Length: 164
Image (cartoon, rainbow, N blue to C red; front, side, top):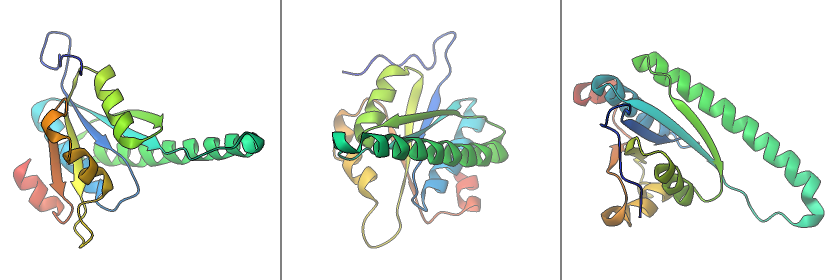
């Protein structure tokens, strides 16, 4: 059970949560969330989840180096998208890096930040479906702790401007 949302209580501010990944449609989610946050006076949180594979003990030194490299890449990716959001709307998003399964870490972040009001995802626009994250999370949409906004990946800036 997720914590009660406090987004609109005194001392709180609603936030749009965007998951940052390597997909081309990720920019669409950032664009939409930045525009909506600016329009509604909300904040924005960007989450990058580093998926850690099976790391055998004999490779611990190598695993530590790989983890540091992944963290550095995650920080650079978040910085790039934060600059994009700031350029779109003047918002400076919070940036969070977590390790583990993306769906689990999204839920954990929502549970710990009671101001997160909406999860914004972008769906791929190819024939292979909307993408694994959207597919996985929408299966639990009926019991998910907050609303999800799914942005079609084919929408351009002008189209998103018209609806945000």
